[in-house]
Image 1: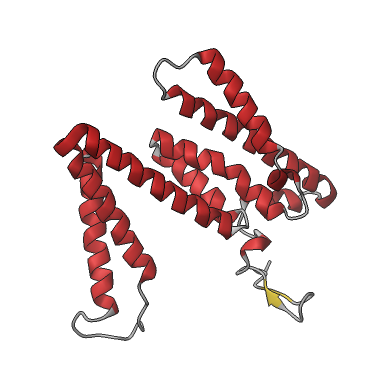
Image 2: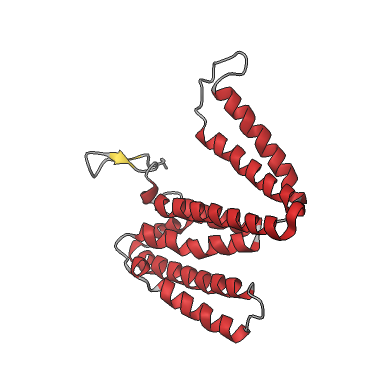
Length: 220
């Protein structure tokens, strides 16, 4: 086969593999290789289940962190949150499946942040990035960064100096990765002393390594 880089059938030709809404690299797209007529309703059902279970789990996890939380209240609140989220306006519309697919991963992303577990966070992040609606993914990452910052600030206030290494490591690691994302690549044939973009790459690597090395020993 051949990788479909271009779609020549609409708009006098447009990118296909490079268009996030095409969801070419999203695992759920594999269903459509089986039977398009059956894959579409099955994909909708699976993503509704994903959103429902994720919202239920997120609500339970959030309430479980409250002092003296009643398990019965947690179950009822989780069920209510799951119903409201799954059948809300943006989820119930099926005209643009990219919105539904990406939104279904949102609760799982925040569940992973709440539990601080790396593998679920990686899976949820991949789902957000590949599901076809990068705007929702960007909002989730910004909100996640804000939540982690507030959580670190609370840790600083409650634990004092003991929380400073963990907070500093998180900031350094995040800033290093941000520099790497924002840097401009230079030509492969360029040689010479560090300058311009090369300085940004070196600084990003240094900060990322310092923060990454400190994170396993940090308390947040």
